[in-house]
Length: 478
Ligand SMILES: C[S@@+](CC[C@H](N)C(=O)[O-])C[C@H]1O[C@@H](n2cnc3c(N)ncnc32)[C@H](O)[C@@H]1O
Image (tube, rainbow, N blue to C red; front, side):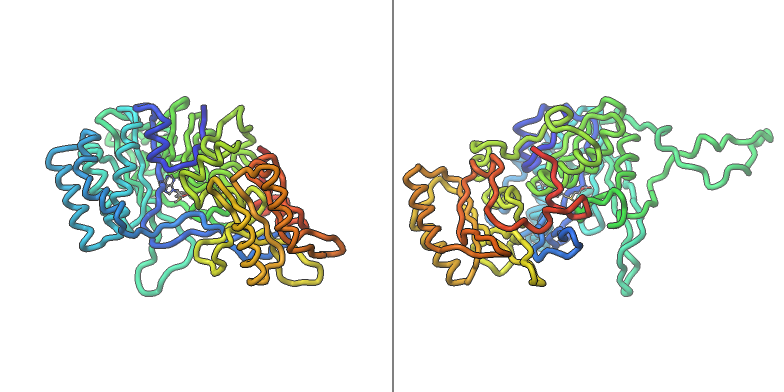
């Protein structure tokens, strides 16, 4: 079944997929750009909302865990049957790089670990396209040479685009690189599916005077010119690193056939998924950001592709019940918080914002006020919330003069606890907005938000949007 997985592609592939089951892999991982990618959202009138949703981070820092991975590289490579001089070279290269360019060593070791599992899931006849840019392409090629074998390198495919800004201090940086490798000496390349038009259609004659047939088109070369995706494009989903469908269609047509399985282990807003589906391929998309899977990719599948969850595809790893939410909390506290906040129509606080302890906000319009008002959200994971947690939260909110706050707790309180919690929250009193009265402090449990409960407050900003770019709430029903 076509599947969208939420999770780290390493663990998803290792724990949920079968070896040698994929015909084509396209991956567009972080590039070591040293940036964090945020999506900026607007309300239905086009006003930008104050918070940005952090889509993912692309900054790499050496810590004890990464250092251990780099030290364990020889063993890791051996476990995946990569040994000999090449493996020895890669392991030494990465540990040497730590002293020169630690962030690059961290990034490459992260990619190596994942590429090993990606290779494991590929059929012997499968191809892989690794999308990168000049920030790390030279290093990634070394890694790919070792993992897939220099002889299985097929192309360095250049995607040359226009648009966007340029520095006046150097040549404009206007290309990405797709490293095309195969798993073995046997692979498919459907040249007729991707032939390019000749620059002329009449002209050169053969030696015998006959005319060459130009109608068929020429064998495409490894530089492809196509504009990058701009925000006014009909396919733009407001996902900052989104790639054009045409690029994916080209790759998929050339290196797979109808009925084949295409995997995108870093699928973002699911461009590969749409291109695969359109071309009659089966597909698997994986992404580690809950926002990418739950909001953006799902929206593409529902709105643009008209697919139905459960019938045409399944989503794996996004909580559908309390046990799933608990599992997510155990795996990744931050993604759990994001999931809770988005579930109640809130915006996640980007890690670096000033409000410590506030995990997100739900914005609403206050009549006569130019700026948005908001309800602050606090998410409590863990297995237990005590009355003292609520008292100290209340004190902090009062101190910071936060008018409205919502608490989401994973812990399912007993009836007696719930009564005490509600009493404590009620002590903060009510607030009157536009003639209606709302409690200043409110509590919802994860079980309640799974069943669709929302906080009692004015209609959240963005709620009434009708599909404009960046409308977070135009979301398919679960
Ligand atoms: C450059 S974007 C991909 C964009 C995608 N090609 C598109 O057209 O939307 C990289 C994606 O990789 C995801 N990612 C980063 N590390 C990951 C991991 N270990 N496993 C799965 N996804 C990951 C990020 O969340 C991000 O959405």
